[in-house]
Length: 195
Length: 221
Image (cartoon, rainbow over all chains, first blue to last red; front, side, top):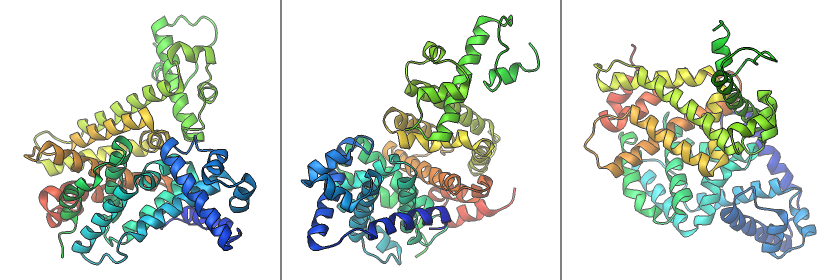
């Protein structure tokens, strides 16, 4: 993350969440709310996802919803963060060489294949959710680019993100793993040449 | 026509009220272009999703009734403006570079033209590169086509399969758009021309190899 505006956006949303309760029951409720939000956003998009819909899908009361999140936007941001964390957890943390970078890409595609709704939230819908979410999306992309440690890392990650977005938006993410050889060969190899 | 004709045609100046003796077709073109300018301004201020027809007509200083003479929806108006910007940007790229130059030099000249045209008006650039993705649907589809066409202006003659070319073009334009929109979203003074070496290297590396692409991209002239 290089820009103060993005940093501020991330910090402010995080403090909002930290005020909220975290007892075991609350943690489960929160997870259910986030899971429902993720599912609804993937089905209907940000704009058509309502607090009523999330509450119904999660099987909690709207009072409970507001104990966890102070607005729909706060909930959507948390759902995005959660989805990004889950995707990142599927990928090896250290990318110290070309081979590891390729393996990380393979792991990412596998995770997308397993949870297309989550991937759709991360790669497609996050760009539609207003300035705060867009800043989040960009921060997550920057974090991924930082691991490539390369002046063009940002552009390469941006290119990969765009390819994935295309597949997820147009084809629902089916067969995304079939992209792996092409992505490796065409998108990564020319830039990872120095071993 | 008077000196103000180009400005009228650009949609930035209002026609004088009452009978002005201008041909009907000119008035129509002027109103339409003012609406196209209006949608760019409204979107720059509010973002696509918060832009309403009311905000477009307000920015264009044109009545809502007149809006409906030209467009049936905000989407239609957005797409018409998009088409005009797209043609303008692509035209600038195609006009740059000598046809007799080797391909890497053409790439550099065309990418320089892209950055030049995009740095002239950041509201237009945001409209072109950022907002279609926020809008999704038909707008995103137009964006997709526009990026494909831009990629074609910097593509070498190649024996790759169509599928590989498509993937490479998409990744390249995704990367270029990422670098540009990052600069836009960061706020402050936007120096898009500083991106030229990175864009050139990014475009050439798959064909020339990383070292040669790096050398060419960072060399003078």
